[in-house]
Image (cartoon, rainbow, N blue to C red; front, side, top):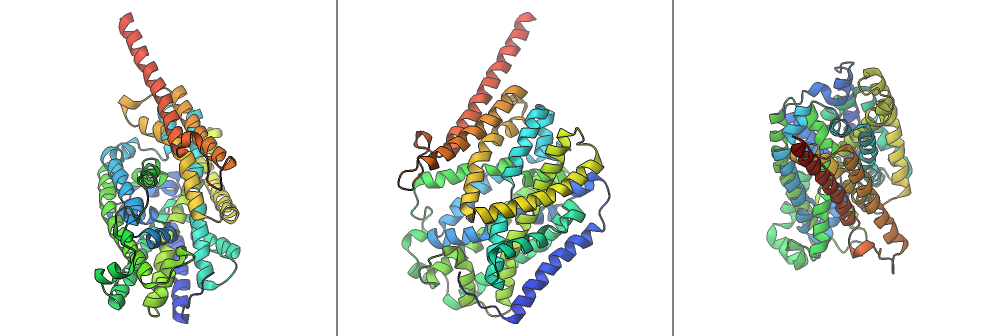
Length: 477
Protein backbone atom coordinates (compact mmCIF):
# COMPACT_ATOMS: atom_id res chain seq x y z
CA UNK A 1 0.00 0.00 0.00
CA UNK A 2 1.36 3.42 -0.96
CA UNK A 3 1.51 6.33 1.46
CA UNK A 4 -0.24 9.63 0.78
CA UNK A 5 -0.09 12.80 2.82
CA UNK A 6 -3.28 14.70 3.45
CA UNK A 7 -3.50 17.75 5.65
CA UNK A 8 -6.10 18.15 8.36
CA UNK A 9 -8.12 20.49 6.16
CA UNK A 10 -8.06 17.89 3.34
CA UNK A 11 -9.43 15.24 5.71
CA UNK A 12 -12.07 17.67 6.98
CA UNK A 13 -13.16 18.44 3.40
CA UNK A 14 -13.43 14.72 2.57
CA UNK A 15 -15.46 13.95 5.71
CA UNK A 16 -17.68 16.96 4.94
CA UNK A 17 -18.21 15.59 1.43
CA UNK A 18 -19.45 12.24 2.78
CA UNK A 19 -21.74 14.09 5.18
CA UNK A 20 -23.05 16.30 2.36
CA UNK A 21 -23.96 13.32 0.18
CA UNK A 22 -25.86 11.64 3.02
CA UNK A 23 -27.55 14.94 3.93
CA UNK A 24 -28.68 15.56 0.33
CA UNK A 25 -29.99 12.01 0.04
CA UNK A 26 -32.10 12.23 3.19
CA UNK A 27 -33.15 15.84 2.57
CA UNK A 28 -34.53 15.00 -0.86
CA UNK A 29 -36.23 11.89 0.55
CA UNK A 30 -38.52 14.16 2.55
CA UNK A 31 -40.09 15.34 -0.72
CA UNK A 32 -40.77 11.83 -1.97
CA UNK A 33 -44.31 10.66 -2.51
CA UNK A 34 -45.42 7.30 -1.18
CA UNK A 35 -46.12 5.54 -4.48
CA UNK A 36 -43.78 3.14 -6.29
CA UNK A 37 -43.60 5.38 -9.36
CA UNK A 38 -41.86 8.04 -7.28
CA UNK A 39 -39.63 5.62 -5.36
CA UNK A 40 -38.44 3.85 -8.52
CA UNK A 41 -38.39 6.71 -11.08
CA UNK A 42 -38.82 10.02 -9.21
CA UNK A 43 -42.28 10.40 -10.73
CA UNK A 44 -40.82 10.46 -14.30
CA UNK A 45 -39.98 14.15 -13.94
CA UNK A 46 -36.28 14.38 -14.87
CA UNK A 47 -35.52 17.56 -16.81
CA UNK A 48 -32.61 17.84 -19.24
CA UNK A 49 -29.96 19.21 -16.81
CA UNK A 50 -30.82 16.69 -14.09
CA UNK A 51 -30.96 13.84 -16.62
CA UNK A 52 -27.50 14.75 -17.94
CA UNK A 53 -25.93 15.11 -14.50
CA UNK A 54 -27.21 11.76 -13.21
CA UNK A 55 -26.41 9.84 -16.43
CA UNK A 56 -22.90 11.28 -16.83
CA UNK A 57 -21.93 10.62 -13.22
CA UNK A 58 -23.53 7.18 -13.09
CA UNK A 59 -21.82 5.91 -16.23
CA UNK A 60 -18.28 6.79 -15.14
CA UNK A 61 -17.31 4.98 -11.97
CA UNK A 62 -14.10 3.07 -12.67
CA UNK A 63 -11.71 5.92 -12.03
CA UNK A 64 -8.84 3.91 -10.51
CA UNK A 65 -8.96 1.48 -13.45
CA UNK A 66 -8.93 4.41 -15.87
CA UNK A 67 -5.90 5.83 -14.07
CA UNK A 68 -4.09 2.50 -14.32
CA UNK A 69 -4.84 2.12 -18.02
CA UNK A 70 -3.95 5.69 -18.99
CA UNK A 71 -0.67 5.44 -17.04
CA UNK A 72 0.25 2.22 -18.87
CA UNK A 73 -1.04 2.98 -22.37
CA UNK A 74 -1.55 6.74 -22.69
CA UNK A 75 -4.21 8.16 -24.98
CA UNK A 76 -5.30 4.65 -25.89
CA UNK A 77 -7.39 5.07 -22.74
CA UNK A 78 -9.59 7.40 -24.79
CA UNK A 79 -9.93 4.85 -27.58
CA UNK A 80 -10.68 1.87 -25.32
CA UNK A 81 -12.81 3.46 -22.58
CA UNK A 82 -14.18 6.41 -24.52
CA UNK A 83 -14.86 5.96 -28.23
CA UNK A 84 -16.76 2.63 -28.06
CA UNK A 85 -19.09 4.04 -25.41
CA UNK A 86 -19.67 7.26 -27.36
CA UNK A 87 -20.64 5.19 -30.38
CA UNK A 88 -23.11 2.94 -28.59
CA UNK A 89 -24.48 5.81 -26.50
CA UNK A 90 -25.15 7.59 -29.80
CA UNK A 91 -26.87 4.46 -31.13
CA UNK A 92 -28.97 4.33 -27.97
CA UNK A 93 -29.91 7.98 -28.29
CA UNK A 94 -30.88 7.79 -31.95
CA UNK A 95 -32.69 4.47 -32.01
CA UNK A 96 -33.72 3.49 -28.48
CA UNK A 97 -34.16 6.47 -26.14
CA UNK A 98 -37.59 7.59 -27.36
CA UNK A 99 -38.80 4.01 -27.73
CA UNK A 100 -37.79 3.20 -24.16
CA UNK A 101 -39.52 6.28 -22.76
CA UNK A 102 -42.65 5.68 -24.83
CA UNK A 103 -43.22 2.29 -23.17
CA UNK A 104 -43.88 4.02 -19.84
CA UNK A 105 -42.49 0.96 -18.07
CA UNK A 106 -40.08 0.72 -15.15
CA UNK A 107 -37.36 -1.81 -15.99
CA UNK A 108 -35.84 -3.95 -18.74
CA UNK A 109 -37.60 -7.11 -17.46
CA UNK A 110 -40.92 -5.23 -17.69
CA UNK A 111 -40.25 -4.81 -21.40
CA UNK A 112 -39.18 -8.44 -21.74
CA UNK A 113 -42.47 -9.62 -20.24
CA UNK A 114 -44.45 -7.23 -22.44
CA UNK A 115 -42.67 -8.48 -25.57
CA UNK A 116 -42.25 -12.16 -24.65
CA UNK A 117 -43.43 -13.79 -21.42
CA UNK A 118 -42.98 -13.97 -17.66
CA UNK A 119 -40.33 -16.69 -17.83
CA UNK A 120 -38.09 -14.61 -20.09
CA UNK A 121 -38.64 -11.57 -17.87
CA UNK A 122 -37.55 -13.42 -14.72
CA UNK A 123 -34.49 -14.83 -16.48
CA UNK A 124 -33.71 -11.33 -17.71
CA UNK A 125 -34.11 -10.05 -14.16
CA UNK A 126 -31.55 -12.54 -12.84
CA UNK A 127 -29.04 -11.60 -15.56
CA UNK A 128 -29.70 -7.90 -14.96
CA UNK A 129 -28.98 -8.31 -11.26
CA UNK A 130 -25.54 -9.74 -11.98
CA UNK A 131 -24.89 -7.18 -14.75
CA UNK A 132 -25.38 -4.23 -12.39
CA UNK A 133 -23.82 -5.78 -9.29
CA UNK A 134 -21.64 -2.90 -8.05
CA UNK A 135 -18.92 -5.06 -6.48
CA UNK A 136 -16.15 -3.46 -8.56
CA UNK A 137 -17.15 0.01 -7.34
CA UNK A 138 -17.49 -1.19 -3.75
CA UNK A 139 -13.90 -2.43 -4.01
CA UNK A 140 -12.57 0.76 -5.61
CA UNK A 141 -14.28 2.96 -3.05
CA UNK A 142 -12.89 0.86 -0.22
CA UNK A 143 -9.36 1.03 -1.68
CA UNK A 144 -9.55 4.81 -2.02
CA UNK A 145 -10.92 5.21 1.52
CA UNK A 146 -8.13 2.98 2.84
CA UNK A 147 -5.63 5.22 1.07
CA UNK A 148 -7.13 8.31 2.68
CA UNK A 149 -7.75 7.10 6.22
CA UNK A 150 -5.20 4.28 6.53
CA UNK A 151 -7.53 1.73 8.11
CA UNK A 152 -8.42 -1.89 7.28
CA UNK A 153 -9.72 -2.44 3.73
CA UNK A 154 -12.67 -4.59 4.79
CA UNK A 155 -13.77 -1.96 7.29
CA UNK A 156 -13.39 0.76 4.63
CA UNK A 157 -15.52 -1.25 2.20
CA UNK A 158 -18.30 -1.73 4.76
CA UNK A 159 -18.38 1.89 5.99
CA UNK A 160 -18.19 3.58 2.59
CA UNK A 161 -20.80 1.26 1.08
CA UNK A 162 -23.14 2.03 3.96
CA UNK A 163 -22.66 5.79 3.55
CA UNK A 164 -23.23 5.55 -0.19
CA UNK A 165 -26.52 3.65 -0.08
CA UNK A 166 -28.12 4.35 3.33
CA UNK A 167 -30.23 7.26 2.07
CA UNK A 168 -31.59 5.16 -0.81
CA UNK A 169 -33.59 3.10 1.68
CA UNK A 170 -35.66 6.18 2.42
CA UNK A 171 -35.57 8.22 -0.78
CA UNK A 172 -35.11 5.71 -3.60
CA UNK A 173 -34.37 7.05 -7.08
CA UNK A 174 -35.09 10.68 -6.22
CA UNK A 175 -32.37 10.70 -3.56
CA UNK A 176 -29.99 8.91 -5.90
CA UNK A 177 -30.50 11.48 -8.67
CA UNK A 178 -29.90 14.54 -6.50
CA UNK A 179 -26.83 12.99 -4.88
CA UNK A 180 -25.61 12.32 -8.45
CA UNK A 181 -26.03 16.00 -9.33
CA UNK A 182 -23.74 17.00 -6.45
CA UNK A 183 -21.26 14.24 -7.35
CA UNK A 184 -21.28 15.34 -11.00
CA UNK A 185 -20.07 18.81 -9.98
CA UNK A 186 -17.40 17.41 -7.65
CA UNK A 187 -15.94 14.93 -10.15
CA UNK A 188 -15.44 17.58 -12.85
CA UNK A 189 -14.06 20.11 -10.37
CA UNK A 190 -11.59 17.60 -8.91
CA UNK A 191 -10.09 16.55 -12.24
CA UNK A 192 -10.03 20.10 -13.59
CA UNK A 193 -7.84 21.02 -10.61
CA UNK A 194 -5.30 18.24 -11.14
CA UNK A 195 -4.98 19.02 -14.86
CA UNK A 196 -4.56 22.77 -14.27
CA UNK A 197 -1.98 22.32 -11.48
CA UNK A 198 -0.07 19.70 -13.52
CA UNK A 199 0.09 22.06 -16.48
CA UNK A 200 1.22 24.89 -14.24
CA UNK A 201 4.02 22.80 -12.71
CA UNK A 202 5.29 20.79 -15.67
CA UNK A 203 4.19 22.60 -18.80
CA UNK A 204 2.15 21.32 -21.73
CA UNK A 205 2.50 18.88 -24.59
CA UNK A 206 6.25 19.36 -24.98
CA UNK A 207 6.82 18.07 -21.45
CA UNK A 208 4.55 15.09 -21.97
CA UNK A 209 6.06 14.22 -25.35
CA UNK A 210 9.58 14.32 -23.87
CA UNK A 211 8.82 12.13 -20.86
CA UNK A 212 6.40 9.39 -21.95
CA UNK A 213 7.10 6.39 -24.20
CA UNK A 214 6.26 7.21 -27.85
CA UNK A 215 3.53 4.54 -27.93
CA UNK A 216 1.64 6.45 -25.23
CA UNK A 217 0.79 9.08 -27.82
CA UNK A 218 -0.56 6.59 -30.37
CA UNK A 219 -4.22 5.53 -30.58
CA UNK A 220 -3.43 1.88 -29.76
CA UNK A 221 -0.84 2.40 -27.02
CA UNK A 222 1.05 -0.66 -28.22
CA UNK A 223 -1.93 -3.00 -27.82
CA UNK A 224 -3.09 -5.39 -30.53
CA UNK A 225 -6.13 -4.68 -32.66
CA UNK A 226 -7.78 -7.81 -31.24
CA UNK A 227 -7.32 -6.53 -27.68
CA UNK A 228 -8.89 -3.18 -28.54
CA UNK A 229 -11.70 -4.85 -30.50
CA UNK A 230 -12.90 -6.85 -27.50
CA UNK A 231 -13.47 -3.59 -25.60
CA UNK A 232 -15.73 -2.42 -28.41
CA UNK A 233 -17.79 -5.57 -27.91
CA UNK A 234 -17.82 -5.05 -24.14
CA UNK A 235 -19.12 -1.52 -24.85
CA UNK A 236 -22.29 -3.19 -26.18
CA UNK A 237 -23.06 -3.16 -22.46
CA UNK A 238 -24.38 0.37 -23.11
CA UNK A 239 -27.35 -0.89 -25.12
CA UNK A 240 -28.58 -3.14 -22.32
CA UNK A 241 -27.38 -1.05 -19.41
CA UNK A 242 -30.22 -0.73 -16.88
CA UNK A 243 -29.00 2.73 -15.81
CA UNK A 244 -29.55 4.05 -19.34
CA UNK A 245 -32.99 2.46 -19.50
CA UNK A 246 -33.95 3.62 -15.99
CA UNK A 247 -33.07 7.24 -16.69
CA UNK A 248 -34.96 7.17 -19.99
CA UNK A 249 -38.01 5.79 -18.17
CA UNK A 250 -37.61 8.61 -15.61
CA UNK A 251 -37.22 11.45 -18.14
CA UNK A 252 -40.19 13.79 -18.48
CA UNK A 253 -40.52 12.82 -22.17
CA UNK A 254 -38.74 10.99 -25.00
CA UNK A 255 -37.15 14.14 -26.40
CA UNK A 256 -35.51 14.87 -23.04
CA UNK A 257 -34.12 11.33 -22.92
CA UNK A 258 -32.69 11.54 -26.44
CA UNK A 259 -31.19 15.00 -26.06
CA UNK A 260 -29.90 14.13 -22.61
CA UNK A 261 -27.82 11.25 -23.93
CA UNK A 262 -26.42 13.37 -26.77
CA UNK A 263 -25.37 16.11 -24.33
CA UNK A 264 -23.94 13.47 -21.97
CA UNK A 265 -21.62 12.25 -24.72
CA UNK A 266 -20.07 15.73 -24.84
CA UNK A 267 -19.50 15.70 -21.07
CA UNK A 268 -17.97 12.22 -21.22
CA UNK A 269 -15.66 13.47 -23.97
CA UNK A 270 -14.48 16.33 -21.75
CA UNK A 271 -14.04 14.12 -18.70
CA UNK A 272 -12.15 11.51 -20.73
CA UNK A 273 -9.88 14.29 -21.95
CA UNK A 274 -9.08 15.29 -18.37
CA UNK A 275 -8.53 11.72 -17.13
CA UNK A 276 -6.30 10.88 -20.12
CA UNK A 277 -4.24 14.05 -19.69
CA UNK A 278 -3.90 13.33 -15.97
CA UNK A 279 -2.70 9.82 -16.81
CA UNK A 280 -0.10 11.19 -19.21
CA UNK A 281 1.15 13.66 -16.59
CA UNK A 282 1.37 10.80 -14.08
CA UNK A 283 3.44 8.70 -16.49
CA UNK A 284 5.66 11.64 -17.42
CA UNK A 285 6.34 12.85 -13.88
CA UNK A 286 6.39 9.70 -11.74
CA UNK A 287 8.95 6.89 -11.64
CA UNK A 288 7.83 3.45 -12.89
CA UNK A 289 5.03 2.30 -10.62
CA UNK A 290 4.60 -1.26 -9.38
CA UNK A 291 0.90 -0.46 -8.86
CA UNK A 292 -0.27 1.87 -11.66
CA UNK A 293 -3.76 1.86 -10.13
CA UNK A 294 -2.45 4.52 -7.75
CA UNK A 295 -1.18 6.83 -10.49
CA UNK A 296 -3.80 9.53 -9.86
CA UNK A 297 -3.24 9.74 -6.07
CA UNK A 298 0.53 9.81 -6.60
CA UNK A 299 0.19 12.55 -9.20
CA UNK A 300 -1.79 14.53 -6.65
CA UNK A 301 1.06 14.05 -4.15
CA UNK A 302 3.55 15.92 -6.31
CA UNK A 303 1.30 18.56 -7.89
CA UNK A 304 -1.51 19.63 -5.58
CA UNK A 305 -1.34 21.86 -2.51
CA UNK A 306 -3.57 21.42 0.49
CA UNK A 307 -7.29 22.01 -0.15
CA UNK A 308 -6.82 21.34 -3.88
CA UNK A 309 -5.62 17.85 -2.99
CA UNK A 310 -8.66 17.29 -0.80
CA UNK A 311 -10.94 18.46 -3.61
CA UNK A 312 -9.24 16.08 -6.04
CA UNK A 313 -9.80 13.14 -3.71
CA UNK A 314 -13.42 14.21 -3.41
CA UNK A 315 -13.59 14.19 -7.22
CA UNK A 316 -12.36 10.59 -7.31
CA UNK A 317 -14.73 9.57 -4.52
CA UNK A 318 -17.67 11.25 -6.25
CA UNK A 319 -16.91 9.48 -9.53
CA UNK A 320 -17.09 6.09 -7.82
CA UNK A 321 -19.94 6.79 -5.40
CA UNK A 322 -22.31 8.10 -8.07
CA UNK A 323 -22.06 4.81 -9.93
CA UNK A 324 -22.14 2.69 -6.78
CA UNK A 325 -25.36 4.22 -5.45
CA UNK A 326 -27.16 4.01 -8.80
CA UNK A 327 -26.18 0.41 -9.48
CA UNK A 328 -27.06 -0.68 -5.95
CA UNK A 329 -30.53 0.85 -6.33
CA UNK A 330 -31.04 -0.82 -9.72
CA UNK A 331 -29.92 -4.14 -8.21
CA UNK A 332 -32.45 -3.64 -5.42
CA UNK A 333 -35.26 -2.82 -7.86
CA UNK A 334 -34.33 -5.91 -9.87
CA UNK A 335 -34.67 -8.08 -6.76
CA UNK A 336 -37.80 -6.39 -5.43
CA UNK A 337 -39.81 -5.80 -8.58
CA UNK A 338 -38.40 -7.94 -11.35
CA UNK A 339 -37.66 -11.18 -9.52
CA UNK A 340 -39.63 -11.40 -6.25
CA UNK A 341 -42.46 -9.10 -7.38
CA UNK A 342 -42.90 -11.00 -10.63
CA UNK A 343 -42.66 -14.35 -8.89
CA UNK A 344 -45.41 -13.24 -6.46
CA UNK A 345 -47.47 -11.75 -9.34
CA UNK A 346 -47.26 -8.41 -7.53
CA UNK A 347 -45.36 -6.14 -9.92
CA UNK A 348 -48.18 -3.57 -9.73
CA UNK A 349 -48.59 -3.71 -5.94
CA UNK A 350 -46.83 -0.55 -4.73
CA UNK A 351 -46.45 -1.70 -1.12
CA UNK A 352 -44.98 -5.09 -2.00
CA UNK A 353 -42.64 -3.66 -4.63
CA UNK A 354 -41.29 -0.98 -2.29
CA UNK A 355 -40.93 -3.39 0.63
CA UNK A 356 -39.02 -5.98 -1.40
CA UNK A 357 -36.95 -3.31 -3.12
CA UNK A 358 -35.76 -2.12 0.30
CA UNK A 359 -34.95 -5.71 1.22
CA UNK A 360 -33.17 -6.00 -2.12
CA UNK A 361 -31.14 -2.90 -1.26
CA UNK A 362 -29.72 -4.60 1.82
CA UNK A 363 -29.16 -7.86 -0.05
CA UNK A 364 -27.44 -6.15 -3.00
CA UNK A 365 -25.12 -4.16 -0.72
CA UNK A 366 -24.15 -7.28 1.27
CA UNK A 367 -23.68 -9.37 -1.87
CA UNK A 368 -21.43 -6.70 -3.41
CA UNK A 369 -19.36 -6.39 -0.23
CA UNK A 370 -18.79 -10.16 -0.08
CA UNK A 371 -17.89 -10.32 -3.78
CA UNK A 372 -15.52 -7.34 -3.50
CA UNK A 373 -13.71 -8.93 -0.57
CA UNK A 374 -13.62 -12.37 -2.23
CA UNK A 375 -12.45 -11.20 -5.68
CA UNK A 376 -10.22 -8.17 -5.00
CA UNK A 377 -9.66 -7.30 -8.67
CA UNK A 378 -11.70 -4.59 -10.37
CA UNK A 379 -10.71 -5.65 -13.88
CA UNK A 380 -11.55 -9.31 -13.19
CA UNK A 381 -15.02 -8.38 -11.91
CA UNK A 382 -15.72 -6.13 -14.93
CA UNK A 383 -14.44 -8.64 -17.45
CA UNK A 384 -16.26 -11.63 -15.98
CA UNK A 385 -19.62 -9.90 -15.66
CA UNK A 386 -19.48 -8.29 -19.11
CA UNK A 387 -18.33 -11.47 -20.83
CA UNK A 388 -20.98 -13.71 -19.28
CA UNK A 389 -24.05 -11.49 -19.10
CA UNK A 390 -24.04 -9.30 -22.22
CA UNK A 391 -24.45 -12.23 -24.69
CA UNK A 392 -27.55 -13.31 -22.77
CA UNK A 393 -29.29 -9.94 -22.69
CA UNK A 394 -28.23 -8.11 -25.84
CA UNK A 395 -30.23 -9.89 -28.55
CA UNK A 396 -33.56 -10.38 -26.71
CA UNK A 397 -33.56 -6.81 -25.35
CA UNK A 398 -32.78 -5.13 -28.67
CA UNK A 399 -35.19 -7.35 -30.59
CA UNK A 400 -38.15 -6.46 -28.39
CA UNK A 401 -37.99 -2.77 -29.34
CA UNK A 402 -38.19 -3.26 -33.12
CA UNK A 403 -41.06 -5.00 -34.89
CA UNK A 404 -38.83 -6.31 -37.66
CA UNK A 405 -36.51 -7.97 -35.14
CA UNK A 406 -39.11 -9.54 -32.85
CA UNK A 407 -39.19 -13.29 -32.30
CA UNK A 408 -41.43 -15.58 -30.26
CA UNK A 409 -41.00 -16.02 -26.51
CA UNK A 410 -39.57 -19.54 -26.90
CA UNK A 411 -36.69 -18.38 -29.07
CA UNK A 412 -36.10 -15.20 -27.04
CA UNK A 413 -35.72 -17.32 -23.92
CA UNK A 414 -33.45 -19.70 -25.83
CA UNK A 415 -31.27 -16.83 -27.04
CA UNK A 416 -31.01 -15.44 -23.51
CA UNK A 417 -30.18 -18.65 -21.69
CA UNK A 418 -27.90 -20.14 -24.33
CA UNK A 419 -26.04 -16.90 -24.99
CA UNK A 420 -25.30 -16.64 -21.28
CA UNK A 421 -24.49 -20.35 -20.88
CA UNK A 422 -22.06 -20.64 -23.80
CA UNK A 423 -20.04 -17.56 -22.89
CA UNK A 424 -19.92 -18.58 -19.22
CA UNK A 425 -18.97 -22.17 -20.03
CA UNK A 426 -16.19 -21.01 -22.36
CA UNK A 427 -14.86 -18.65 -19.68
CA UNK A 428 -14.83 -21.34 -16.99
CA UNK A 429 -13.37 -23.95 -19.34
CA UNK A 430 -10.64 -21.56 -20.43
CA UNK A 431 -9.47 -21.10 -16.85
CA UNK A 432 -9.71 -24.80 -16.00
CA UNK A 433 -7.53 -25.76 -18.98
CA UNK A 434 -5.24 -22.72 -18.84
CA UNK A 435 -1.74 -23.19 -20.25
CA UNK A 436 1.08 -21.44 -18.39
CA UNK A 437 -1.47 -19.24 -16.69
CA UNK A 438 -3.07 -18.18 -19.99
CA UNK A 439 -6.74 -19.24 -20.39
CA UNK A 440 -7.51 -21.57 -23.27
CA UNK A 441 -10.94 -20.55 -24.52
CA UNK A 442 -13.14 -22.45 -26.95
CA UNK A 443 -12.19 -21.98 -30.61
CA UNK A 444 -9.30 -19.79 -29.49
CA UNK A 445 -11.51 -16.69 -29.19
CA UNK A 446 -12.80 -14.55 -26.34
CA UNK A 447 -15.76 -16.25 -24.55
CA UNK A 448 -18.13 -13.42 -25.45
CA UNK A 449 -17.97 -14.23 -29.17
CA UNK A 450 -19.41 -17.79 -29.10
CA UNK A 451 -22.04 -16.57 -26.63
CA UNK A 452 -23.13 -13.79 -28.99
CA UNK A 453 -23.08 -16.23 -31.91
CA UNK A 454 -25.33 -18.66 -30.04
CA UNK A 455 -27.78 -15.88 -29.13
CA UNK A 456 -27.89 -14.75 -32.76
CA UNK A 457 -28.36 -18.39 -33.85
CA UNK A 458 -31.47 -18.69 -31.68
CA UNK A 459 -32.69 -15.33 -32.94
CA UNK A 460 -32.23 -16.59 -36.51
CA UNK A 461 -34.27 -19.70 -35.74
CA UNK A 462 -36.98 -17.47 -34.30
CA UNK A 463 -37.04 -15.30 -37.43
CA UNK A 464 -37.26 -18.39 -39.65
CA UNK A 465 -40.24 -19.62 -37.64
CA UNK A 466 -41.92 -16.21 -37.89
CA UNK A 467 -41.35 -16.13 -41.64
CA UNK A 468 -42.70 -19.69 -42.01
CA UNK A 469 -45.83 -18.82 -39.99
CA UNK A 470 -46.50 -15.76 -42.17
CA UNK A 471 -46.15 -17.85 -45.32
CA UNK A 472 -48.54 -20.46 -43.93
CA UNK A 473 -51.11 -17.78 -43.15
CA UNK A 474 -50.68 -16.35 -46.66
CA UNK A 475 -51.17 -19.77 -48.27
CA UNK A 476 -54.29 -20.45 -46.20
CA UNK A 477 -55.73 -17.12 -47.32
